[in-house]
Amino acid sequence: MAGKGWIALSHDDNIRRDPDAVRAVMENGGRLFILRGACAHSDLAAMFLQAQKSVRNILRKNPGAFIAAVRRSIARGGFVRAEAHLWLTYEQWVRGKGQ
Image (cartoon, rainbow, N blue to C red; front, side):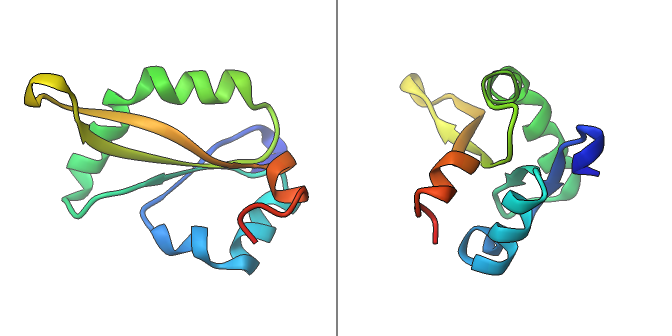
């Protein structure tokens, strides 16, 4: 799927701590967003849609392999917002980060 330019979504946060899984994503050009949070699948989907702007920014700035997390955070004033945060790029992985 990575060869077709698709992105992957997962709810398995353990991927980030599994060296074999990280290697598989990076070596195959994967672009992975991990949806973080203990909530219903419909809430995870809504969270991803709410984070759409930051997701698009990551996709635009990182054409190669990466792993990013999408999660909710509390903004000023106590408002909850969802954003995507880049965790690891292919270049960082090659230099040894995340291993």
